[in-house]
Structure formats: C-alpha cells, structure tokens
Amino acid sequence: MAEAARHYLTGLSTNFLFDDAIFSLKSYDPAVNAIRNQLWLIYDDLREHKHEGAWRISEEQREIILRIIMFLKSDFEYQWPCVPSWYSASRPIVWLLTLGFGVRALDKRFEFRDPENVWPFHGLEEVEKAKDDPKYFASAT
Image (cartoon, rainbow, N blue to C red; front, side):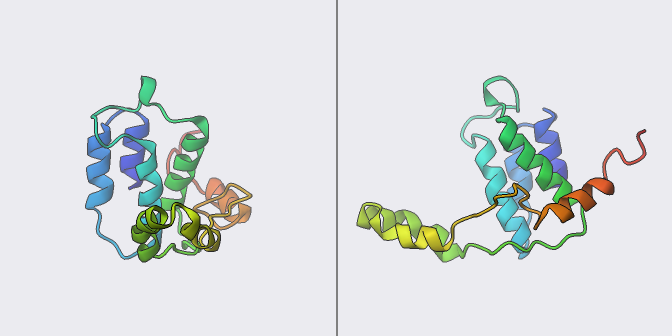
C-alpha cells in the first residue's frame, strides 16, 4: 500500500492502478482496512487520471497520505477503534429511512477524533519516533 500511495502521489501511476493495488490486498488487519478507506477518498474512481492538475489533492490530504506511508513503513501497531462494517454498510440506508435523524447517535458513537492530527499513528510520540527512523531516504544526507 505504501508503494502504491507513493507511486500515485508522484505521478508514476494512475488512479486506476492505485485503486487496483490497494483493493487487491486481502487482509484482516484493521489498519489495512482503515487506511484503504482513507486512501479511497483522495481520487476519482470513475475517470482515469494521474495526481496532477485538477486531480491534485489538498495539502491537508497530502499530509495524511504521507503519515499513512510513514505509518505503513513503521513497526507501530494500529490502535484506533475500528468502525464496524455493519455501520459503514447500513449508514446510508438508515440515513435515507430516517432522513438523517437516525444516524446522529451512531455518528457520535463512531466519531473520528484526531485533535493532534496524527492518524494512523496513536500519538505524537509515535510520529516523532517514525520520523527519527525513516524507511525511505534514510541514507540520503
């Protein structure tokens, strides 16, 4: 996943190749599923494109993707609570049936809170340790 994200961000691959790479990976690891769901938000999966021009992501999204890559290359365990698949699958139906009112309590229960902006790491200390031991460009000085 880290390589696929790097290749997409640098323009070496298209969104379709990126999509194939991240969704072909089969894993029960909660980090893989959470990261896949986040990565899926950064590109259009209907039209082929590269990460350039109108298809470039925001600086905020780029920072998240860089943290994802750094996390995937670290030895840290994913510690964020997992959103149950039943919630993700049923939320649109519940929203439609209740005109949005029925999902408020569920949204509050599974609300994603990351005030330090460290996700997928679990704290600033992990981010700093990962920065101190980079897996890419480690020998470039």
